[in-house]
Image 1 (cartoon, rainbow over the protein chains, first blue to last red):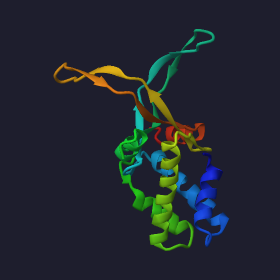
Image 2: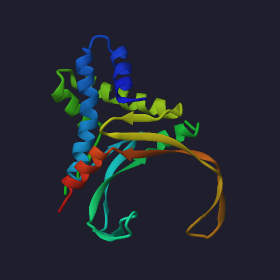
Image 3: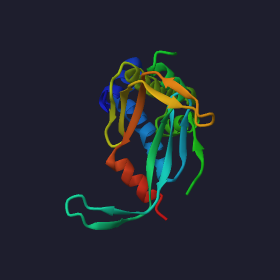
Image 4: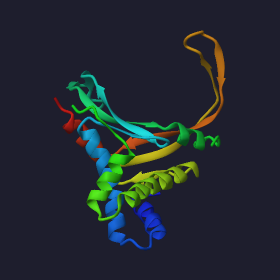
Length: 94
Length: 100
């Protein structure tokens, strides 16, 4: 399923809404999650999962092509942990 | 770096501000988004949200695990797990936003 299919499903269920508004609604949900993580905040969606930010320490990396060593700076990366209900549903337990 | 936790309430508040719907309907729409994504994943589909990321379901085979506290061996059954791969855009925004 891709973004446009998700928008279509929600538009089909809500015939009283303009397609344009459904697009804005779906985009807002994802935008809010990304914005929160860009601020260093967590997003906890019970049953679905939680988005958080993890810190990766600085390290000495290597250019795999040339073998040259490069200093990689400390950085923050997005992380997702699946919620209990969804994990159970994936395994046919709920 | 912020250390707030956002919930469904914050997402529906954002939808409420963005589109002129009631708070109640905004909350229901946020729930629909999550439900449709979950249902697709449970069916084994990948969920690909451009410029956000990709959720995919992977099959794990059975293996022997160990209780780290007691050292006891426990069988781990084959199971399905969900992985999320953030898009480059999300990675960049998170890296830039949290830079010291």
